[in-house]
Image (cartoon, rainbow, N blue to C red; front, side, top):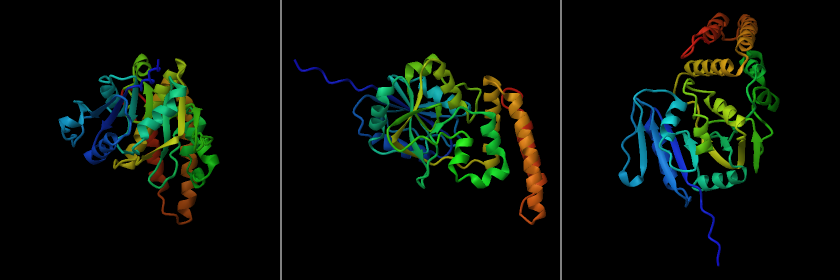
Length: 311
């Protein structure tokens, strides 16, 4: 008797959408081209986008969830994941570029590690790594990133390691890390639901590390499958200062939940003072920088009340 071939796991793809529909539609086109032969469900979660995603052709088999309120990345994914029918949940940012074998390659690379949260290697359009593998955040990581004098070292491996990027992740095979960035994540659906999905109190940033901390407590590791690659635009068209505020808000929310919020505030305030002194010297030397304006901006970030509570 010939043994039956192993069954491919089903994959439910969730794509959060907000803003210009073009990237989302381009990604949906790439998903349709996949060589994956197992069950595949595609869900787009329209997060009350100012430009709604056009209704897909019924023959495409794409399900669209239209949220009434913009809640951010985690909320949008949760809304889409509520419809997931398959064993594996694949969360993809709408601005990703993927090859035709992406789903098959990622599922195959993840299989020996399951249950696990698995990310591909993520690169920008220039081919530069976006450090898919990360260390759990510390106050030290965030101070190094905040300090203006250290910005000149951003091209070095030491700087990346000291802001929390796991620089030991290579270009082949799989490697466990503390957490993976949320641009592309393959997650067992039952495990995602067991921890309640994303914490919707986060609006943008830190929701994926919070999720993976909770999954790690259940014994579910995070892994980078460096042999599989996705291209990520990143950043979007939103105002840089607004993106920075979202990041700061999220980091304080994470610190309040997991410990260290007071230390983080004190350390970043001290780093802001250092930045002011350095910028004052630069300004005196003729550099085009307004030290007081930067000081006000950074103190404003640290003093703002976050969504749902004090920062």
